[in-house]
Figure 1 (cartoon, rainbow, N blue to C red):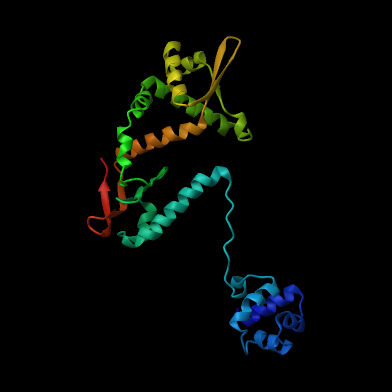
Figure 2: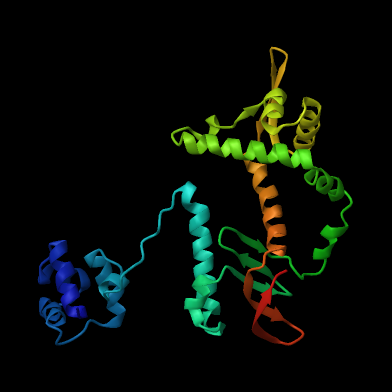
Length: 276
């Protein structure tokens, strides 16, 4: 549809005559008629006023479809963000890939590595962005002595067993009762109950729970009738999951296609690496 026909359509939707529209714009009704018959075009400087008079945007005046803001529910946001990141990566790097964007859609692992501004990895069920990779001082995290006790606690077998049990049962409760409000499904656990389900004795569970508590993986604890109830923290659990997903990536045998930036070569290049 040409500009003239678009003006005609929006004028009628607005309920204006050619004379009324011309008056608003300071032109004659004959000028408006010529626009709509496409024997002449409005002055480009008049277009913003024309769009305003018709109650539309300049894009709409030119027949350009405007993208509506996509509304995403909170539950769908992680998936939507991951899909947007993957789509952007494949579009940007597809031209460099053997097979182009079609191949990129079917690769298990995608990555972008820069020695100056960070790294991105996308797998089938996990995405990771780190924007300090390669930057001066980013290696300091490996030297932080206070992190060693945290790593030791996270590698304690009983602590991991209890953590995995609490993680699974907390989210199982949500999936079995989707109508439950988020603040209502913070599961509570007692040492005897966890011991029975995990096949550990109570002393082992108590020691594991104390480690999880010190790592803030338990939100709080309450006491009633001489029994301690522990509340599992969904918020902090996500960070532990990220750590173990990264470790899992190191041992996967899937091929990784990545766009790499190496300033020593002053070029971008694609590489394929087999993680083992």
